[in-house]
Amino acid sequence: MSGTSLDGIDVALVDFRDQTISLIAASETPFEPELRSQLLHLCQNPTVELKQLGALSVKLSLAYAQAVNQLLDHTHLEPSDIQAIGCHGQTIFHQPEGAWPFSMQLINSSVLASQCRITTVSDFRSMDIALGGQGAPLVPPFHQQLCAHLIAKHPSLVLLNIGGIANVSILKPAPLRGFDTGPGNVLMDSYLQQQNGSLFDDGGSVAASGAVNSRLLARFLSDDYFAITGPKSTGREYFNLQWLNQILSHFDPLPLEDVLATLSLFVAKSIAATLQALPAGQLLVCGGGAKNTHLLQNLAQQLPKWHVDITNQHGIDADSMEAMAFAWLAKQCLERNTANDPHVTGAKQAEILGQITQVHNHHPTPKTGATQ
Image 1 (spheres, rainbow, N blue to C red):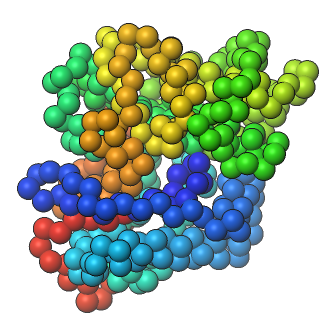
Image 2 (image 1 turned 90 degrees about the horizontal axis):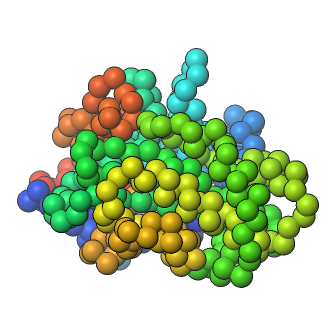
């Protein structure tokens, strides 16, 4: 999969035998600069020629296939060892509300399946949206199963994924809930790239050198999205450079480090606000934002009574979590099990998610894991 941060392709090889979830191997392949630039342009400028859209879906799917095949080569596995590929694709527009709700992920599943010679499951969000849901987040039921051994240990247990967009899975107290809290890395990364060409603020060092502008922070937090209670979801089509630059246009020019410092605290506050009604407990952080030391410090300061840890400290790889989730979703689809939770997405009912693309002569051995 590749997330809203557009930092690369994550592949996870996952074994689901014996009612356990085991990560066998994982890789992250950076996007080639031209492909990343094309995807970023598409996300920021949703009006595009159909010819360009179709060609980019093939180009992206070939990059996915190369990443999968490289991991199989590294682990000395054959296509027959793999039950399925679960591929999320690249979200280019997410609009779960309105007269014609949809979520569009760029993927050519036939190209991916044929290049890897492995049955491929994709298009996981459309069914949930067709049933009146947000189509996101889909990962809380997976998080619940993955973290089952931790739930009894804490009065509250929340898993936070900080990608381009940040989302939470509230595993305890019941019932299971989850939603997008708002921006994760997307605004910080996009603004930094606009200003000096850097792809991201390594460790949050630039933000740590700046001063928070309290008026700007208050303006960020006043956005209507933060007044909505779940189920809710968002993406680059809302929180993007246009959103940020429009707000900044009402302020005197600020140093880069001050804008990033304010954005970092904004992200931390928007996340913390969603947890204030819960008893203090354990917050587990995964995703690219788990590497942003300054952001995690801000988050811990906003939640002084909580234990804030990276999932790696509890034996769960922070970089592979999302890819593992879509391997699990593929497994659910192939076994005809429901995968969405109506409490989380707002759908009318739980349903089987995903569309299956098969290839001739793919006969996986029984009980093998799935890769994403």
